[in-house]
Length: 121
Image: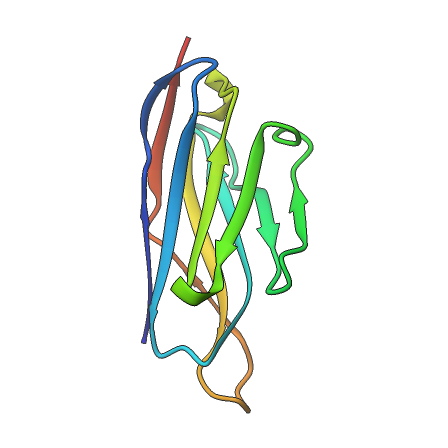
């Protein structure tokens, strides 16, 4: 019904930048919050950033000032610009979207398949 496809991950040196994207498609009436989580090797999944439909944002303390989340509502796409990357940012990054299928249905959370970001020292 709803698919999320992430792209833009890869290998980068410490101090470098990457931008990951997340495109939502399928049975969509409205998208509320979108966001990114990450899971590093041997670590629990953690919240990275959230953006509401009105473009209010929230960040994990560990990425504040370095990462920027944004969205293009016309394209049903969210972005995560990651600057000043550190080896500790190495993780699989997962995006999610809270989607309503019709005007009177509750929002359901959908997840992407994840994209690997590796930061070398």
